[in-house]
Image 1 (spheres, one colour):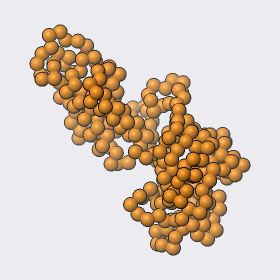
Image 2 (cartoon, rainbow, N blue to C red; image 1 turned 180 degrees about the horizontal axis):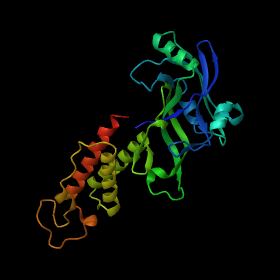
Image 3 (spheres, rainbow, N blue to C red; image 1 turned 180 degrees about the vertical axis):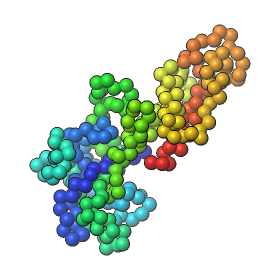
Image 4 (cartoon, one colour; image 1 turned 60 degrees about the vertical axis):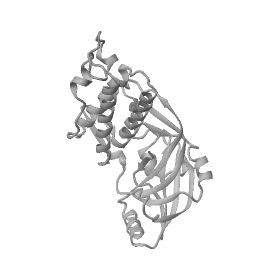
Length: 276
């Protein structure tokens, strides 16, 4: 799944159909607990020159609305004052200049940019990254991710960014699309463990329970979860027969129960992803 990041309007210059703006800021920690470092775009801009497009709302099914004429990393001194006010710790950023086409949609977008009503976003794959533990962090998505290298696919004008798309689960505030990507990745890893016959640890079972419950908390009320007897009865084997010596449930959840619980979590996340 490609990731996206959005920056509030940071237009540097508008001349006719040409617009120059900042689409990424380096060195600051964003709403996703990500920090992009200078040089993260260097390789992708060299390798994908001419293949990076400027779109409307990340719409890969429609033609671009503008032609990118220049895209590069810039130093802190080249950032607009408004960016530095929002991110005083910024080390630099990435800038794109594009020429908007003479089409109805492109001209509508250009008019909105001139009115200051749009934001900028970009789609990418993380290539090289590492994590920093944050004080008091309990969940994986609370760690700080340092993005050292990314593969850039496109820049986009958007109505509003995913930075505002946060959801509450009890007292936890989590960026919604980031949460989905993290949980789906965890589910994929667990599926591979099942295929390989790996033992299902208490931590794995707890995580699946958290995923399923979180999905319900977020509004997936029409998800039917695993039969509670099969899920929680430590005396049941995969075929429903009784175990000779029951063990603690957290360590003996049967493979069948584990798969059903996993499928329930997947269905819940699939349902929620359609609302992003």
